[in-house]
Image (spheres, rainbow, N blue to C red):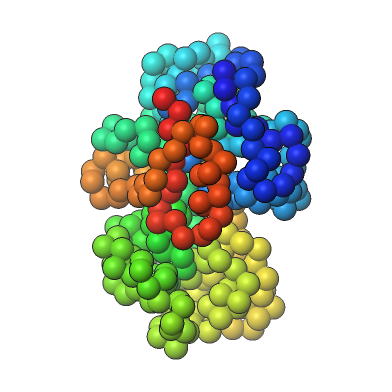
Length: 309
């Protein structure tokens, strides 16, 4: 099979398309024929060697955090899936990445993919969707009627977060660049703020939850707009815990986990037409290096997808 792998750390230039053996599933795993995967900002950190503490890497490494495809084989302990099932999920890419024609993954890390969309769109969901879902609800405890500020609202995670928060009944404020403000409003945001021209801390206040996908200065400034007892949940390192404690704000970071029950809930919202994945461009396995370079530019709406079949 073909797979996109790295043998050393570096820029996206180190990505190589290679022929390797098809992996075989263990008793609790399935072999998926990969139809599509997707690019995520964390790819560049792993490829550059900047995520070793969190995601220890052994070479050669096949990258790719998202998968949508069809089960071809199942281990003898797998009971909840059958050969031919269309599934999606978030593999752990420092073990088995999805920029490949086949992928082995534990059966308890996948779910049936949404029926109403194809594999290209389904591949845009797992990591970004799980991150948005768990950030808002499992860690952020967002409830109906609360005010939420979502940074980088037009990106892969942000575009799901806006839709999930609106479905929950929250008042949603998103930050983005000027060219993305109308898009953020189309996703369902009540307000959209141009972070390049406006200071969000001068525009909003009395926020129950900030969902921070940027970190650093944005994270610190966000503490100014949160009400006492509110929450700041980040996918980046939480850097200002002492300051947050003084303001009676909960500051916590997290990494999304591949829980099937969350994937099932997200798939249900997609099939109901309440939530839609956003795909900005589609490239092949051969175009994986170009796809990572596009992602590194940081201006992507939604997700860049790698179409394998």
